[in-house]
Image (cartoon, rainbow, N blue to C red; front, side, top):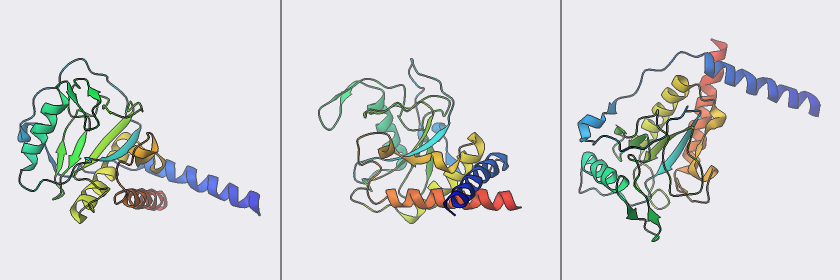
Amino acid sequence: MLLLAMLATLILTVALGDALLSSPPQKAPSILARAEWGAKPPIAPWREHIPSRITIHHAGVPTDLTRTLPQKLRALQAFSQRQDKLAGGKDKPPWPDIPYHWYIGRDGTIAECRDPKLAGDTNTEYDPTGHLLICLEGNLEEEEPSGAQIRSLDAMVVHLAAKYHVPPSKVGAHKDFAQTTCPGKNLTPEIAKVRARLELRALSSGRS
């Protein structure tokens, strides 16, 4: 019985992966382009990569309702592209651009950040090469993600998984790869739900 159960699990896992890889690319959700929020060009040098994972972060700072999303992104880009100190006092070298590829605001707006052809950056001990990085606004260790953010995250993961052939097993959280609480205790359970919905979609596609 144990052998049969293991075999059934293996078959289902392969079927889910094959269904996802063979499903047609999803229409991209509405995204605020770099030009629309006033981005500056990336600064060389940078590293190109082949995306194979989707990894989810949170900003780690409380949501600021006094500034617009474009204002926040311009400030984040300015910080990212200069040499500075992190909150813990650690030196941060200049990065080519915002370390994430997409940023989801409190209202669910998805903003284009770093070119997905370029590997991201991190102040933690892991190599983000191959990772498509999505960041949700807010300190989600303390705040709850908004419903609009979760809906946008779900739509973005479905779109990226189909476009870049990422199986559900490779959709995860920053804390899966580094010693960190990111993306926060209030977002982490939602990532499992997003992954489960992606698995169900893959299974459904396989049956259609």
